[in-house]
Image (cartoon, rainbow, N blue to C red; front, side):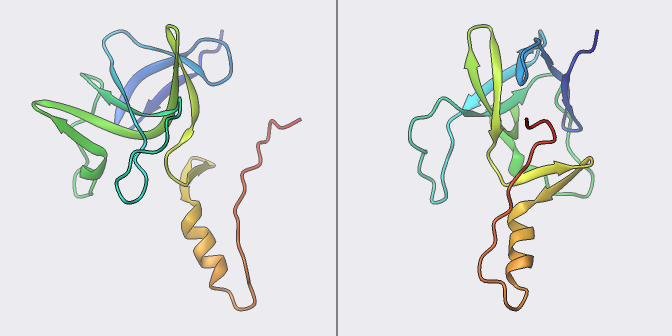
Length: 140
């Protein structure tokens, strides 16, 4: 049996695949909070089912040495939450992955900022417009 796990360097094992593509259950002991999306300018985005995943608990790392990750760490009293930038929709007893809050994609294990790529291509003389689109390898 192959089980898909949601793991990152900022938090250890927190979710596991329940069979349907993109659908996960939370590992017992992991604390989860879904935060409303905030648009540029600080306004909460129009009501949508997708919320940003914040993770807390013993699975959360202490932080990075010599780098800035404070913008992703949020404090609520003594409780620390990590903003994953992943969007989830809550369903009865499980969560469904619904994308990301930012314009980052993972390419061969490396995070790529698509906005940065678009800006670099747009700076090339003769280029009038740029749009980076994601194409799934699993598309029919």
